Length: 231
Length: 231
Image (cartoon, rainbow over all chains, first blue to last red; front, side, top):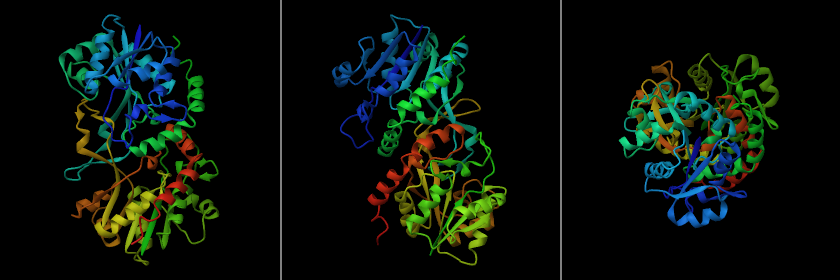
């Protein structure tokens, strides 16, 4: 049994907007509804846990299906993950997929690659090569970008692995970090440029362009990747 | 006097296509024509040097205006830059702007920020924060992404600075590297998520979505940023 955790609990706001970025409206949907729809459409999850700020619970409840578990987030990303894992304790899924709602454009092909891979590997993350040159801010040293990889979400873990990692360490920005530090290896799954993170105002403009075409992109991808999970 | 160098000389092809990526067609234009149009529309450049592979010269000539200098690229990016600088030697511009054609979606606001900044600073590059978690491939160590910055193009340099840097070092992937190593400081100018680099097949799909809206995005930005260079 696989559970999906969608993190929309952030309040931090580097975007010039009155509402947290996950509640900005893009076309006909709020931002968090894009990846939520991917979760729902995938048919992968027996349980979906949607983590939101306390004062957005009522609003979110009016927008989502009754079978979504809407829970309150913490002050940090890792606290929000912990709240979701605590909530899942009574359900005890075999696997959990964790995704940031600030990456709204989640294709089914990516979700399917992640889930297919975690069944074998136990701990996986979407990742992409570093294609831009990178320099250290302090002294403008160029680093060899081929030695690094960019981590996206979704990530997926065997439930016992992420639980153990979460009990051992209490604060992190990326869930693969405590997993690696607990001695588990994490496999990379090819990420997707559409699954970029919305952080700044300029990202919203790009997101609006994609949102206007998202339905077509999503359906085409869903159709092309439909055999990925058949065993 | 300012010259613009547009690098479209690459042959490397990580994209499943018969032609180098800069010659893929997106909507009604070839990929290299998007940034070329930005260069031309900007009104910034007295000279525009377009660097292409030798066997694409004839094709490119049929597509571009007679006043564009179309020259042959080298085997590497730095050889192509060197060819362009050698070509400019007889013209001796005060400043050069260098841009990769594999970043087709170049807004005028970004070009204008770069040019405004180089007049004061002498050496500048577009750059963006690292928003994804980053790990070292070798041992999955998480790096503190806030200590790094991602370098985009366009970049701009006083002509004497880039000439000197180019004479001192013969091979690099990013033009700020020899400039920094020659002891000059390079300033960062805020980059643009639209100005991402097309490297893989999946990037082309994203590029097609943007291309379908590019005219509107470009014109809106051009209008909003039109006072940026007025002195």
